[in-house]
Amino acid sequence: MTARICDQMQLDALLSLGGRALSDQFVADLARCETHFIEALGVASTDKRQGLELARRALHELRGIALTVGATSLSRQCAKAEALCDLGHLQDVVEARAEILATCDALTKLIRDYPEGTSL
Amino acid sequence: MSADGSSSAGQLLLVEDTPSLLMLYRTVLNRAGYSAISATNGTEALEKFDVHRPGVIMLDLMLPDMDGMAVMREILAKQPTTRVIVITANGSIDKALEATRKGAYEFLVKPLGDQRLVAAVANALSEFRTQSGAAKALLHTPYNLPLADFLGNSDVMRHLTQKIKAVAKSMAPVFILGERGTGKKTIARMVHEQSQRATRPLVSINCSEHPSDELEAMLFGSVAGTNGDRVETAGVFKNADGGTLLLENPQDMPAELQARLVSVLQAGSYTPAAGAAPVPIDIRLISCARVHPTEEMHAGRLNEDLYYRLFVIPLTVPPLSKRGDDIVQLATSFLVRIARQEGKTFTTVSDDAARILLNQQWHGNIRELINVLRHAVVLYQGPNLTDEMLPEDMITHAHTSNPNAKHDDALHGFEAAIKGLTMAEIEQRAVMAAIERHAGSIPQAARELDIAPSTIYRKRDVWTKPKD
Image (cartoon, rainbow over all chains, first blue to last red; front, side, top):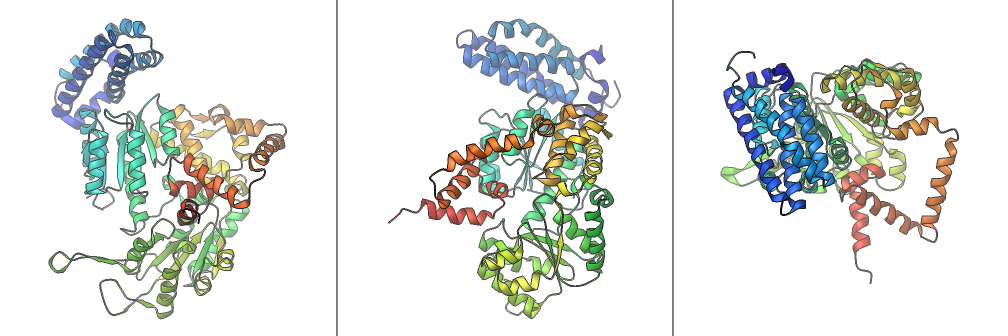
């Protein structure tokens, strides 16, 4: 399961370097990005342009974290959704939401459950 | 203290809006001995820049309150010697390349490898310190290429190497001539390191990158404050004493300072800003420039006495296009090192790619070659550098059956554009267009036009002065 969510060695190296403080911060940042993404889609229902811009920003930040921890699937999903935001395809972004949030939740769980001081 | 033994306190600013990434970068840099100040948005970054004046900025291009590119522009306008390392996500390479064209020192693509991050910061800090004259110059070949690889095997470079060996043993001043990006500073380091002064400092100062008063302080030292909080800073004469002083672009030094330098060289002593009595100095002088000092002397830009004191033994570094097969050897050596830093595994250059590299003009010389290779390493996996990985315009250029056709078209367009203009008007248009291309950065426009920034400042003052 781990391999499909992220690169185990990359995550291992990062969390060994930064310890519990870093893993807690990753979890907090992932949750914040998820919230911003959901809120952005809410804004988009009344102001499409503004909502898509906010969504693109949230997805971009999420992609930065995903790339850093080696979560390739999530980074790909975010990149694709970012491109859809740029193109103004709101409906497609809304449809991508469930998959992105599910992958993000799985990554969050993996990091939260990371055993301190040991390898995954 | 950092791995290179120097303090980075207050010299490094991290600008990143994602707290976990900021924490991670800080951890990696702390472990390598670098301490950094940080900001999480553009406004805070500019405020902290004004207070601390750091020499190196690691800047995320996407910030919550303003565009990272605008932050970089403002910082470079305030302090052009700042080294800005741009951070970008994979897939936003175009933006990063645009940033390097607009003055970024280099770009890093997420995920940032620990070694790559530390190496980028170390290189940037070292360059900033060299430029600002704040420390002994640490002149290395780009990517720490072994000197043998850097020199290659072409006849022109073998001849140059022999000449370096011969002049290094002498105390006579050396003047290194060469186009931009040919490695003049590396040649200066070779002269220094093969001399009897090799264990003493090699200090460099670039006369075209500092305003007159700053240059004076860098040469002779400075004194700030009074009595209790008096701070004295040593100049390069003191820092280079017993070693070698590398003067870059001496023709761009203001006339008054050129005259003072002549006096110092005649007397073998100088009067520091912090003292009243002359202090004897023992330095060997090496100068380097892109322009020929004889022409500069005839044009009145280089003091005649100074010319005769500096232009004693000329060394000419050939442009990359004249180095034949060295180009492929250099490309392979750089490729392996750049790939290592980027976490890739490039090892070879294909025959087709080699043919294209050998067919280029390389106006930016080694610096341009490095940019082309970095571009390929960032975008592709390796291990073989193939022709498809090279920039499209290079491939087109190499494959054009009639290489003169494109040139002729460009020439006709250029002729139409300048028809009816005076020489002065053509010059003004060329300079203003270059400034615009570099988003208002005069130092960068000057680099492109191969003239001193001070020349542009002077000309611009004349152009903007109301006519009587």
